[in-house]
Image 1 (cartoon, rainbow, N blue to C red):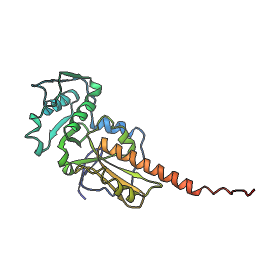
Image 2: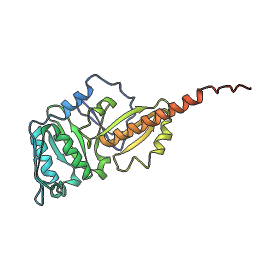
Image 3: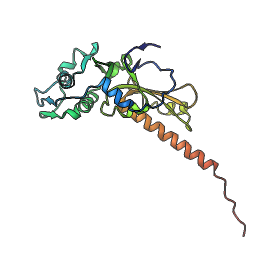
Amino acid sequence: MKTFLAIPAILLSCNSVAMLAPTEPQASASATVNENRFPAATDSLTLRGGEDGSSLADMLAELSRATGITITIDLSSRSFLPSRSIGLLSDVEVPAAEAYSFVAALLLANEFHTSSIHGGQTPMLEVVYEDDGSLAQCMLVSLEELEGLAEHQSLLVETALDLKYADARAFSKSMRSVFGRSESERLVATGGAGQLRLSGSVKRVTSMVAAARGADRAAFEAESVDKVPAQKVSKE
């Protein structure tokens, strides 16, 4: 398995499956990820609409200016990303508090993902085309950290989830037609019958977690019903 060393998070190739035990949630873990990887915006984003509107590259440059984060574009996207318009009908001033979520929404709408490839004092974000996601790096996060990344819907991540009642292998097979539409998106059972490894954008992985938890809850309820003793019918 190919791993990428980075501080403080673990980065993995999105076409690999991390054979790691799920980590216990840490206090303020999501806050730590955001502080080290995504510096807060100190200014609003100014984006142009109309025929001569901002391109995706212009939007990313604005995000870099407002946050200080370094942004790079993967090789296959460099030729056309500067020429692709973000498609706004009119000019928009995006508040600093919504900078990341606004950019992530437009990137997903244009079939792009982001990959956090460096943290610390010089955080760096790579923009990758959806179909090239298998070559990108997924950031390994806990379920708690995943919840803290809600404003970074386009970010590629990987997490682990243990099912207590539903069969992980059966669930992963049943979800193949729902999840796995891009190269970076995976939902696989690993280890024992109850563990799932989920990878993809924050938006899609969050949906996977919700679906898996729903299946686990349904399996628990079905098991509980089976254990209820049948009531004796009295004869008159």
